[in-house]
Length: 249
Image (cartoon, rainbow, N blue to C red; front, side):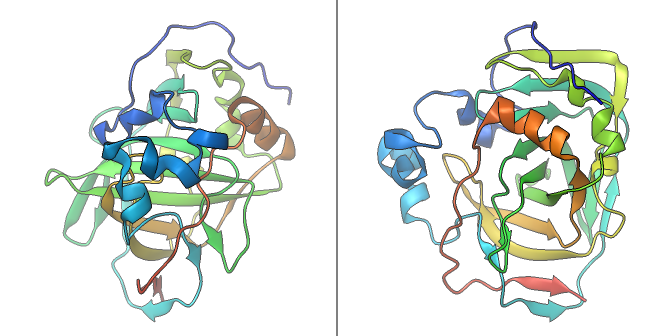
């Protein structure tokens, strides 16, 4: 399939999570003087990027197998609502879609693409990572990470990949195109769990990370199309320190 990337659209403002709204600004980036190594010095608001002890992403290794709650996504279909923030491609999500983890309930706010993957598994990087962003009524943040490897074309992604906005600030919205984030997750929701942070400034800590063990596949053409728009959009792995990484049995 040839992808017809979206070329014209409306300019949009900040993103769906106030905590990550800063990623539409130009004072930080992924290379050079404003790159990840310097985030902590660019603004007082970004100090945690340099001083935090629970920073993300990390390399997943040396895990502790335990019995944990099942991830229970209760996602509805939603209108296509894509934006190119200049640093990532983001899909905002409609209301009344939830992730239940035991007695915790998080509302799905949307998902973002990262290329290459931010998390690695025993040192292995992946060409892409999809991060599903959630918040709770108590102000907690939970992110489900879906690792992507090259393989067969992803039918769910093919439904909207041709509409990826090409330029910084452009968006594409259509009530005629429906998507369900569950379709971008593997059948098995077995996961690694750890406490970390946002992977973009201000690098706020206290984020519940659920990194799914089973990758999904996108075709080389799908991966190249997204990477051609975003370029590199991944923070390097951060020190683990003494954090536990739990591994669902």
